[in-house]
Length: 303
Image (cartoon, rainbow, N blue to C red):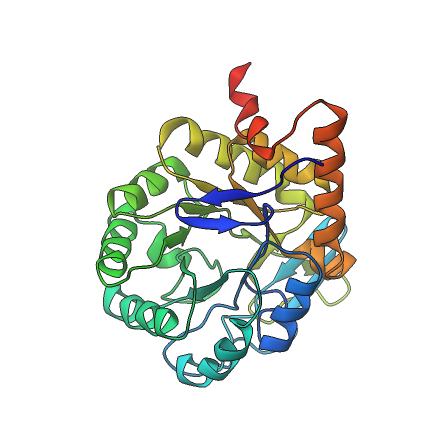
């Protein structure tokens, strides 16, 4: 049986799959359900300092090859989320706390709280494409990425993973800024800015008009981003975008990712996707004479 264990910096995982932020990460019950389904780690919904309603409906549109969403970072606020973390961290895999804020001070306060609540690591949402003054609007600037990462890292003892936006000219520049800020790894990518229009209604379908596209359609973009980051920046990468099978995950792993996150794949296939992805990876490794996942990490760079 092939060994699927991996590590992202100091974070040890039983297998390379993680629940992506924004899918089934609202409550401890849902997070633990994902743990029981075989995920190697889970990432919470992005949490802010105060409760936030997000955008009005409609906020999600199912597309032919993915999902288009503009939820708007709706969340209960960090103090209320403490109760969920106290239960979620009783599972046997790492719980990564996702946080968002408008500046270094907010990100740091939230990250410190997540560590106090038992998070094994913190993910910095510097890439949400549909929240004014937050996410992408901050994280598209390398200077901001470095300063926020540096500020958070100096206040924590657990790993820090900035989540990067693909909606820029050069994502490698953002990864380099994160590395210079002391990041333990980066998450690539968040959703791609997109929109859908109803010809019948002659108007955008999402109430926010612009949203973020996830799912199969963006996998080639995510794989390219991971490949470029691994090649240029000496920092672990967690790959995200359009993963619903073991072969999808292997694209990212061979591009240089140490682990992968699954979001839309859960929406489509349910929590069971984690077990099926791991099984397919294991079968691929054994079929090709590999005893460990490490044998294929970054393999695409050897050609």
